[in-house]
Length: 114
Length: 109
Image 1 (cartoon, rainbow over the protein chains, first blue to last red):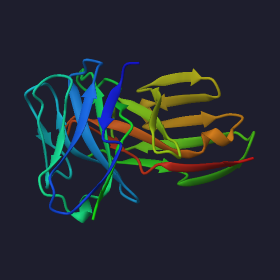
Image 2 (image 1 turned 90 degrees about the horizontal axis):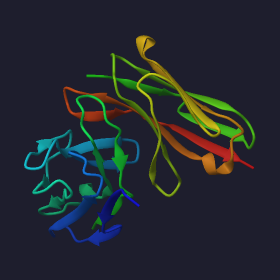
Image 3 (image 1 turned 120 degrees about the vertical axis):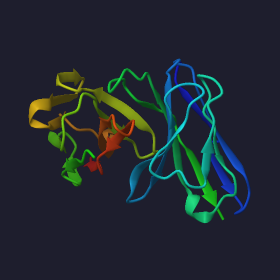
């Protein structure tokens, strides 16, 4: 079944450690996104990529980095995790046709930073 | 930027009841989606509906773009409909979907 695969599903991490959340899509969408979801704050955009080779900052980019070496993969890296990065992380993709194009989400990665 | 407001914030239903969820947005859009986040946290696409009316089983949605609102109808609700319903619109200037705060629905047997 086509879609978006995220890994790991959940992770407990010590503060200060480096962590990469993986995201792969097989729909050949050009645009990909990372959101975090926190209770009471909804879904907030961390970083996005309009096409392979380009990335951009969202609302809450500090402490996170991304890369887009190819169409399918969009990993999110926490260089030195802090407890405030405890959250559920969702990767998403869509075929960007200007302002149109349906967005699809992965299953989410639950990250706990102690 | 675009503001997205959903109402009601919370809704409790008895199984079998019907409901209407509303999404208001502050500017013209050409991309609007409804999502259901189930109790396990999965975000499920319900409708991609920048305008017009669509139906999928017991669910239907209508977007009146000129009046800047969208409605999600749930008929004959079931306990599996419980969760949070999000409306989201695209903000081209920021290249992201702007999400409403959601309507939390609880359907009791």
